[in-house]
Image (cartoon, rainbow, N blue to C red):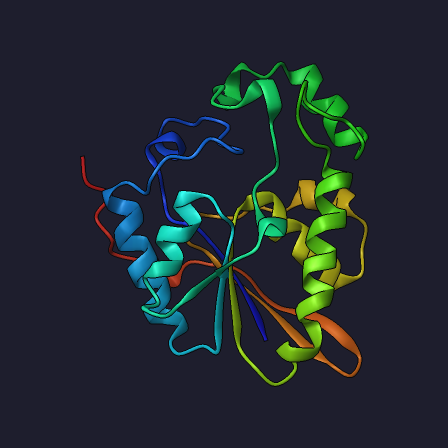
Length: 195
């Protein structure tokens, strides 16, 4: 089983910013979300994380050695890093949704992200038939992972939503990958968002 875990909240999340490759730490709620997610998932055979601090800190909640894999880093928003999501013009969002090769200035396209994420998943698939592997990552790579498991194109990722510290599960078997859970957040119920 490949278990995709989105990192916990950061202050940039709370402010509605495009995070991409900017590298803030988890905020107080994010630390609690990471602990709740690790507890809900339980014992695993491997923990792999994006190199960004928010993913590494979430992965650390499992209390085991964390492997780093660059292929599961968030989309590079280029010049838009740190920009409020609402500041991106509606027409730009429409253009982006219509074209998987659309690239933010100085950034990365969803097509490019998909190539690296799918390669990472293919490398892990045979081991994941008999082991539970957690990958702590970000919205865009996890959506690309779901598309891979479903055998659909990445255009479908625009119709997916992932909450902070959400859990998604990809079962690997003889018939290939299957998406068995997506955006599970019940483990976060009752967490006080704080100030």
